[in-house]
Image 1 (tube, chains in turn cyan, red):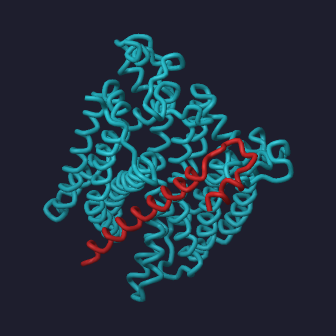
Image 2 (cartoon, one colour; image 1 turned 120 degrees about the horizontal axis):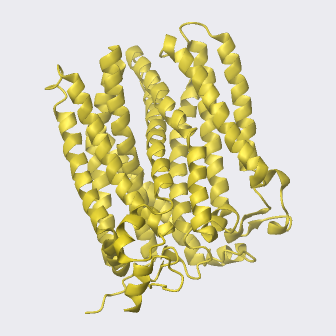
Image 3 (cartoon, one colour; image 1 turned 60 degrees about the vertical axis):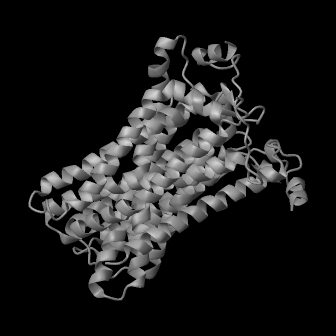
Length: 447
Length: 49
């Protein structure tokens, strides 16, 4: 019986997959980050005896348990859609990554069991707190392992491994050229994304509540979330650079498409979101330093300087390389691609921008953590500082979907043809043996 | 609308069809709708404490 080539009316089957996967990732990344943040918070509560940590950890664990249903439902719907709409492609993936998928399934199972157990035995293990904290970290570990497995598949789709024989197919495909940097990028990203969302949620609740003790708690929550969000965000330029370097070496056409070519606008969009995140976070830190228990005026002045430099470096990152902004919708001016903008070139300006942003970020967060050590007066934050946190939550979601789109669209290059597995399997599920570096895959096509 | 989209991309190198542009925004809309709905629902079932 031939395999049917099903399509979906109006929106098409690519949109179905994109919708299910992107939404799933927004939940999955949050769950992995949130479980680890909650477990760390519970540990900090155990060590410092400060009630905020414990309250926060427990509420977050509860939310994660409830949110798990949505994340898992989307994952299974996605697999069903992939089997139905891309059966040949899925079959190829299964042939290469059978063991990886199997391990992932068990990691997923382990994560569900331990997350539920972790939340449910919270009171039962109240006097064995260390053991309970370990439950949380094990749940996070399982989540990270599940992510690692799917990262092997996702990275292989962009940079399929150079494989000569069947014997080395699984190992080389798993550890393909961009697997490790992608995994690191997502590992750090989980914390940052979850942290910003927590900060935004804390800010929203802070503005909505009128009870003094609640205001203090949600003010603290916004601060705690932002430390995770911004603290991990500033590591991303270096790791992201490593990932892009891997793409440039293994899939240069894809690199050119997303960094210099038709789709360079997605990267400009991305740095714009990061600019908003950096400026809003630094502005929040500057504001918060006014409420340090021990007055720290010098630190605050230094942080104001940091804010200025953050703005300067982010502007440097945003400037496009040429006047061809979004060619797909005709957004180009002054001669388009021919008009180069000197300050928009990758070398040296973008490098200066990214490295500068990181260094200033580390400097500002070091100042802030220094002030955090002596504490803040909670519940006094201004409204606009909470708006800054909420805007971080909003823009981090845009960052996530933009990055997801960037990675997936990199395989399309000029759409002639677009690939599901770069240089190996086209969007119409045909194997292209002449260009595919994974020889067992090419040989299977010719048999 | 599609004519407008096609007009806007004249001279572009990416050359997507009008349908492609529609699908790009359709996907974005659907992702945001699912995401906000599921988060909202989860909040709604969890706020009973």
